[in-house]
Image 1 (cartoon, rainbow, N blue to C red):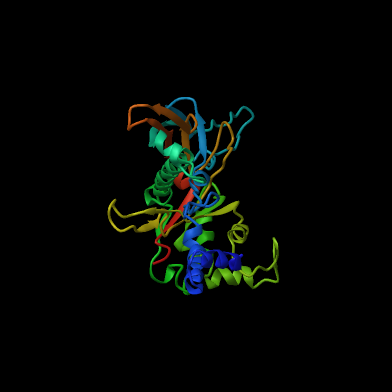
Image 2: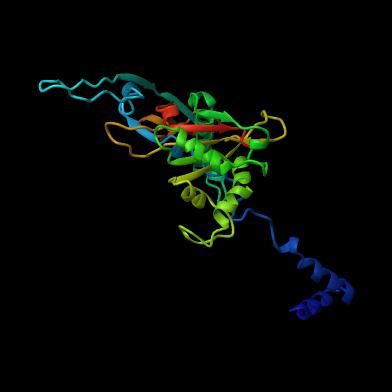
Length: 340
């Protein structure tokens, strides 16, 4: 191919060096390719898993606000004299109280605008409408995650069932004993916890703590089989007879708009042992907390002809929730500042 081109170029009066230069230039990468977006690849950074719905499961309600009944905390713990003296003695009547508590949902929503021009001009694989839904939904998820974390890791949610660890008791020191601390927390609750909720920074120290590793990894086998190389959430759940261990790994931007981006953990350096069930008994239940939800999360696309040259649409995502402590200290225990 090149020899034929050389002959043609030299026939038009170019010498050999000039012809070779023209051929080399004509086949440079920039002369045969124009940069364009890949149609099957786009870069994005996703947040870590959200755990709010596991920590405070959702209860669907038919009204935006209402009441629910609460038995007195001592109902199933109080002892009364049951001795019957005499042939006509009457049994004593049990004493207990029933009260009500209320929930009141709050409306939450965010939106984004996508112009028709943007949708018509977008190159694959960009889908502006789909991307807007994902971004708006993720912002709502982060907001809910922060609200639930603020409740689950707040000392005030647990009454006297809370302790701040310090010094040699913290789980980033080899002198501490997190295994005993977790056992103590579980036993302190009236209703036995079934999950552990722990911040990522605390989990990294707990999973590598010598006391925990000694308890799990020094054995020839575990309930799940052969001894693993590392401590996992499933192994820790099994060790303490819990249903699951949930690690709060989600992050959020802590800097103000316009400043250099800085991120922090949504879940702090705490560890909670709580009771959480998706489907409790329809009449009676004892769980740490619930999300009362009025209607499902809704995603709407709203035509908007006015903005810009050719209009577009608003992507709107909304929900109505009340995240509320229900049994609190009766069904949970919180350790704060478990690591430095």
